[in-house]
Image 1 (cartoon, rainbow, N blue to C red):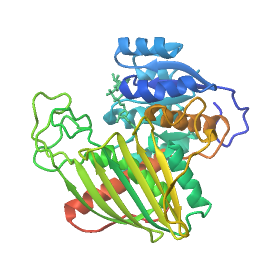
Image 2: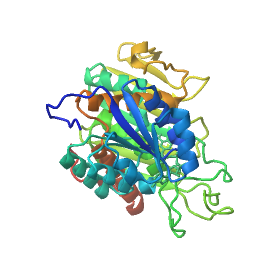
Image 3: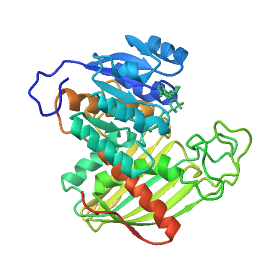
Image 4: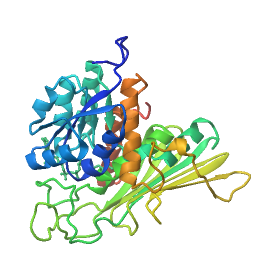
Length: 380
Ligand SMILES: NC(=O)c1ccc[n+]([C@@H]2O[C@H](COP(=O)([O-])OP(=O)(O)OC[C@H]3O[C@@H](n4cnc5c(N)ncnc54)[C@H](O)[C@@H]3O)[C@@H](O)[C@H]2O)c1
């Protein structure tokens, strides 16, 4: 295998195996691998044989497996994609790392930061690449804001505000997915801040640097709801929404809201950055058939104006009218594959996933203890 930092010849194509072949794999991961001209989709694995076979036929994989260990033993596979339920992410990723495969894993890697940091260290030790499925880092609008910050266009950054608000689980009879079967019934169960907030916190950290301290309030708004795999409405105090205040190590201020009971379309991500020279707002909210909008203002001309990015900002064959899961994931997978094949610096790694989880943990502690929580180091 071509490991980062070695002088071995670079292969033309990357052999990929995908583990987990249901809804999200079908709408985001598999179309993205199928569209990349330098990917050889070697195998699809699912514990449900009929699902694996159907996806093999649809996306043209050479093999199917029903046990991930068989997929990991396939020497044609250099990179593994873990797109299974959350509680399986860490174990499958660690097995893939041990087998010497590069790994893309859906978020969250784990619902505690410690094991996620350990997985990042294991990958570094083994010399394999990792990427975490933080979809919204691969929004063309968000990447443009990142460039504006790096190039100094926005000046010194004062405020970074992040929202992930949609009404996916406003209806108590629409079954909630992200809940462990053994979730406690006598206390608040963090949910929106883990499922959605982890994306948002990663974006804010990517744009604004390390978090120094957080204060937060979390609440359950829908007292009884249907939960996938359980029959009838359940009295579980699911955390439907969180608001947090952030002090960045740089001195910038931030505001966070994650909510899946706030009326609005999916995915409902909005990032606002305000600096000494200008400001930018990216809205990743599907409206009028358009996946996202980007606006910018400057200190001299304070009215926000639309910014239209050129086609070079979009994966080949996509436009702003491409459904967001495919648009962003094609970009994410393009980066994952190119970083490996071209030995480029990696970004959005398991380490970043662990850092995001650490902030989630601090927000949960800040709510529980009703006080500001300082992050362990406040530095990279
Ligand atoms: N990044 C994003 O924006 C985003 C969006 C949606 C979903 N997700 C995440 O993607 C993941 C998959 O989502 P989904 O809705 O498709 O989940 P799902 O539960 O519907 O499907 C998971 C699939 O994995 C299979 N599976 C389970 N354990 C397996 C194992 N050990 N080996 C092989 N196959 C196994 C199941 O049979 C199923 O087909 C979840 O972690 C979810 O949180 C991320």
